[in-house]
Length: 196
Image 1 (cartoon, rainbow, N blue to C red):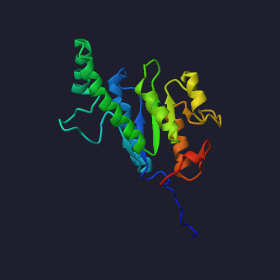
Image 2: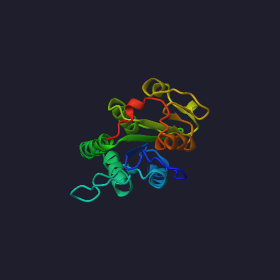
Image 3: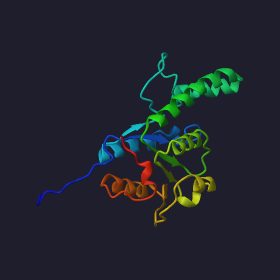
Image 4: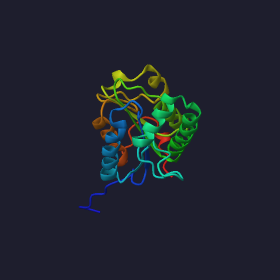
């Protein structure tokens, strides 16, 4: 087919879970998730599952949310000592968020420098145990990644902007995703890129 440029779009329709801190993050982690959702949609026609903008609501509206009024509600429960109500609320949120990890094809995480993470670690471990591609951008680069990540994630090849699935920046992540989308399939762990 001379003169026709064939363009792969191997990532089209994939569902990415957007993992990262909420509790202690600036703007509850909303901003980067909205920006990334738009970028993944525009570049690759990917869809996202965002724990700060859940695709479903509870019987009472926003009971599964972790931001806004629901975040304040949880903080009030904690400060008043209503730990049973807090535990009940958080069990549902944990269940919903882990279910979104289950439903996703790939997990993309952002770990900002100096921000405590807890649920994100649980989600990353769940994705790794499910053999999903688990791509993590560390603010400040690979040097900021806890040693534990180096034992948990594929870490080769080492390039100037990534080590396996540990990325120095959003640009490094998009370079990798561009290659995946074009069918160039950069290592590592191609066996985890099982697209149904």
